[in-house]
Length: 55
Image (tube, rainbow, N blue to C red):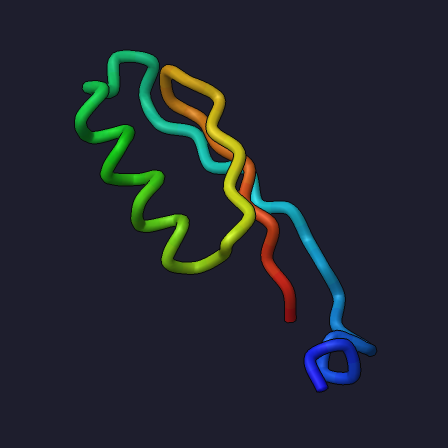
């Protein structure tokens, strides 16, 4: 059933970037929040991430 649900969905990549002086703990918290939106999150320390979103 999951494969049928994925048909017709469009996948996009969201680039998130914070300040270069973002504290490591805050960056980790941002990544955790992103992971609640999508199971596909690629971190680019110290302050960026790519997130796959589907609609």
